[in-house]
Length: 104
Image (cartoon, rainbow, N blue to C red):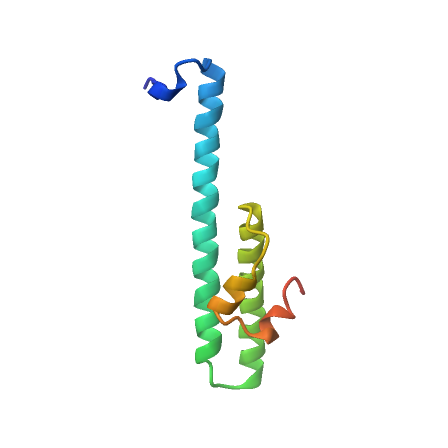
């Protein structure tokens, strides 16, 4: 398989073209990982909200949710999103989850 550089790269050298292709691949993987982490956090939050059982199970779900939200926040930061205020409001992340972020 041969790689033909896009027309916008007429002055670029071959290593620059390959580096840019690698950069695009890395950005695509970051975006995909961010989506997966967000979906896991959203699922965990939904399970926590829907839980109406015993307290020990709720504590387990709380720890699970905090871990998923923490992983999502880390992935957001890796993608350059440093502030999480809007996400916390939009997804109504409970304070009881937020205080457990990073705790193990």
